[in-house]
Length: 322
Ligand code: SER
Image (cartoon, rainbow, N blue to C red; front, top):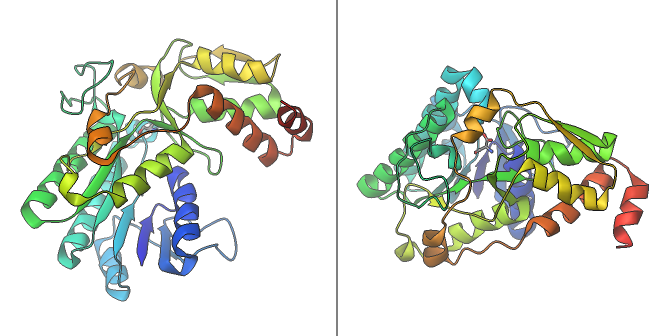
C-alpha cells in the first residue's frame, strides 16, 4: 500500500490519479490537511497533519505501507510570508516521515526544488553538485530536507529518493503560493478573460516542466535500480526554460489578442535568486531521465485542458481543428 501526503496539492492530485490507474485505488491511501473536493473521494482518504508526530505514528501503525510519497509542503511565496509554518511543515513534517520510514524500513519519496539554489549558485546549467545558499525560508527548508535525506540514507539505510522540481505547470489543481505560479495562472486568465497581469517581469527566465513529465520523473525514479543511484540528496531534473514574455507569445499563437502586462512584486526577488536552466545529467545517467514535453506541446495541451475545464467550447473547437 502506498501512502501519499499532500495528496490534494498541485502535484498530489495528478500523481495520485496516475498511481491509482496503475496500482488500483485500494492500494493507495491519500492524505492531506484539507479534505478532498470530490465526495466520495476517488481513492481512500484520511486527514493527516504531518507536523503532528503522534498522528503520523498512529497512521503508520494502522496500515502496512510499502512506499511513502511525501508531498505535503509550503511553497516559496507563502514560506516567505510564514517562515515558521514553512519550517514546521517542510522540515519537521519531513523528519516525522523520515523517522516513520526508518523505523519501518519503508522507501520514501519527497520533492525538493530549484529553490535549494540561491544567488551565489551558477544560474545557467546549474550543476547537480554546486553552491546551495538559498535566501528564502522555503529554500532553507529544502536544503535542510536534502541533507536530512542523505543522512537517513547513509546512516540508517532508508531508501530516500527525491527530485529538485522546477516550476511545474498543470491544470488539475491550482498551485498555491509559489513563485513559478505565473506559468499556470497565465493559462487560466488567458482562457477566462483574454489577459494576464504577471507578478514577475517579462524576461524572468525560469526552469519549468509540464505535469505529465513531473509525474513521469517520480515514477521513473521510484522504478530505478537502487544500485545505480548516486544522489541521495535530490536529483536535478530539467525539461524547458522560458520567460513570461515567451509563454505569452506562445499562447498568443493560439489565442490572437491575448495580452500580458507585468507588475513585479516581492516574488521577483525570489525568482531572480533561482537558476534559469538546470543541468540534469546525473538523473539522465543514473535513471535514464528524459522529458517528453517542449514549450509548444505544453502550451497546446494546457490550452486544450484549461478550455475544457472552464467550458470554453469555441476555443476548444478551434484548437481541435489545428
Ligand atoms: N514551484 C515552487 C515555487 O514556486 C518551486 O519549487 O515555490
